[in-house]
Image 1 (tube, rainbow, N blue to C red):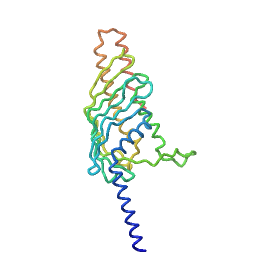
Image 2 (image 1 turned 90 degrees about the vertical axis):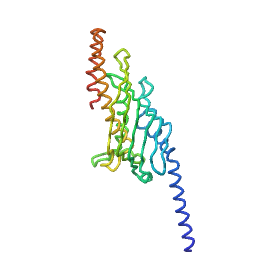
Image 3 (image 1 turned 180 degrees about the vertical axis):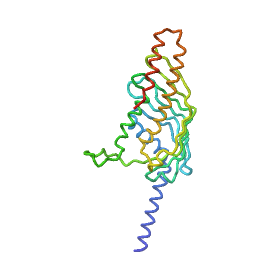
Image 4 (image 1 turned 90 degrees about the horizontal axis):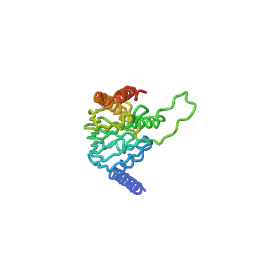
Length: 255
């Protein structure tokens, strides 16, 4: 009887080891599917990932060709395109409830700002994420309705995130189709989710997109000001239109 119990225990252990190995070997496909499934649910736009190549031993690797589409009603081909994303994941955390990402480095992304006084594509995506994460908050004692139950998804801690070499393509309505490409200053975020023992995928996107949007706003306002300086010979009407757009953008993202 004792030998049978030992054999059963060995079989269970072997099955567990096989399961763990299978998870690590399929890590890349899990990441790709997760991005392309959860991403659109949060943002309400098309999201695709070209490939994921993360070492199951070191946790280091690269994500390539992340495409974030535009909300309905916008005409530019994309909102965000990320060609090269280097990541370093704590391998030991992959099988826990909270995945720790030691570093994320995004190099030379292309971001498109489309819109004007009535709104823009980036803030619309952020609004969608905010709405999607509203039910992530725990219910209070005064709540009369049960919160919408969500699958017990993974939480995330991101210790270091850098975006550098970004290009901002600006397509403004009300300026005669005027377009421009501007550099974005580097963005460095640290310790996302560390104080709260992890954040949901939605909160992670929100905490990344919010400061990025603020940076985009500053650059767009500065770019419009420079355009305004160059329209002196175009006429009073055009100059007035530029100035109106610049003033409107100052409060465009204030919540």
